[in-house]
Image (cartoon, rainbow, N blue to C red; front, side):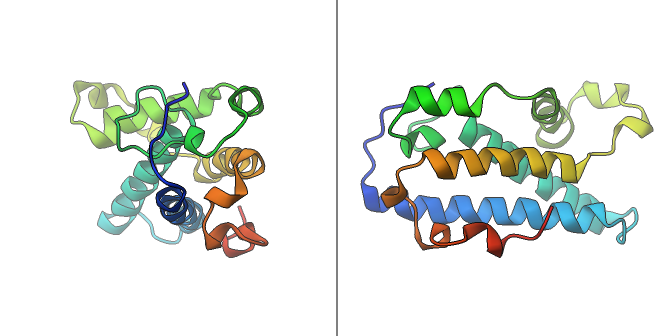
Length: 163
């Protein structure tokens, strides 16, 4: 859903630096968590929570269903909204499930947690990061380049760890 944006170019450019940070954190955490080197415990749990919060933030950025007036969303950067929405497509099943899980298991204390079997609790960090990476690539191609900050110049993805 497109949203009219009254923010200046400078504000959007500055906000794009925060977007870059969010994505960098997501991809970095995906690599750390998928390595399996941490094992179970408080550090691993904290990193999983951080990963899922960054992932949900990016979902809200790309698929702006009900943005608040001060939310930064992809459509603030896109000049051809129809092309963006076609290019972006709908949320995949993986991303829909992620959105629901973060709401039920991370962001809110729900009785739904009681129904989750231990083998269903794992997240596929790399698959999630790859899907969000693909969306970010599409966003970068469709975005008004003047609205993106310095982190997006040149080979922006070179700063990101491989996924």
